[in-house]
Amino acid sequence: MDRQPGLDTLRAIAIAWVMLFHSYLVGGLGEGFGQLERSGWMGVDLFFVLSGFLIGRQVLASLQRTGSVDFPAFYKRRAIRILPAFFVVLTLYAFWPAWRETQGMQPLWQFPTFTFNLLYDNGDNYAFSHVWSLCVEEQFYLVFPFLALLLSRRSSVRAFVAVCTFMLIGGIALRAGLWWHYIEPIVKAGGRPGLPYLRYLYYPTWSRCDGLLAGVLIAAITVYRPTMMARMHAHAGKILVGGLACLGASIVLFDGARVDFWPCVLGYPLVALSMAMFVTAASGPTRLGRLRIPGAGWLARASYSLYLSHKGVFTLVDTAIGDSLDDHRFVRFAIFAAATLAGGAVLHYAVERPFLSWRDRHAPVGAPTKPGHRFCRSALAREPSTDPLKR
Image (cartoon, helix red, strand yellow):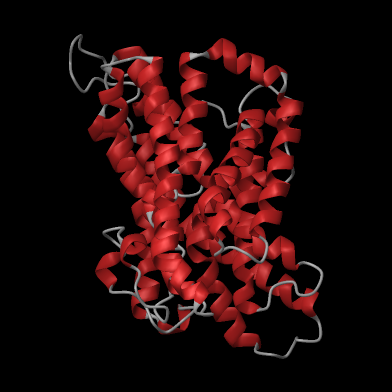
């Protein structure tokens, strides 16, 4: 399957925005760019929607065609895609303290088990904290194919809508309860609920399913209601404008108030809705879907390596240049940007890409399917390489 330039554009925007957000660690762009930097965490939610859409489309298409999922092939491809570059960066964090953005780090076993996002309990142990979103996606990969297979055996629009509605409303209710229990007492006492906010509301998978759910919903419409999706693509311009309006409302809602009640409870579904509109507008033969921006394709392909490595590169460069360029903020930022791209490129070409090439050379493309075989070969065995950030 060919790469989709519109989705690559979104992926490139997402990784650039996330790295800009994390540039607060080294001073960022400074005055005049505060709101753009502060809202950069929303790029992760764009990745969640992309992941839900791409993985959802692959799994649901397989179920539609064959009634089954090749689980061994699916998880093998996920492992080869994710683990090599991840373990290289984890090794740097574990054995090279100069690489860490903070000296403190959660127990090492939480990282390869992808449980960091559920167990983060010490504000001083912030090193490699951006792995939380990878944990969310790994847990999604683990559960979603089985859930999709289960629902496919009771293939009903009503059942699917019921599950989606339950997850949406359940997430809202859960975050409200968590906020009242963990955040409100600290806010009332005049404290700063940074650690409880991260541990109970921002990092856990059960609090951050909105983007993944939105992506799966777009995938379900694409696979099972292609006529409806075609009509949506015909109005891609209006959907894009709606997405920009929702994004603007999200930025206003969250700006300076991320730990308040309404942003925590209703803000994440609003962000997911805006990102879902962008993905919908970019997923078909639309203007946005055909948009090619120079460099966006490379950023999209290297986004996973960039995501894993950028904080470590920030830290090394910051140590090297110190405060020598504090009066030249744009020159300083340009140095950080160039070093980050170079570090991501090294990881991408030295580790990530060789493993992907090996995986694709050994993929069982066109393997015969036995009628009635439970784990029959499917479109999953020919999974496209248009994966988002953690792919």
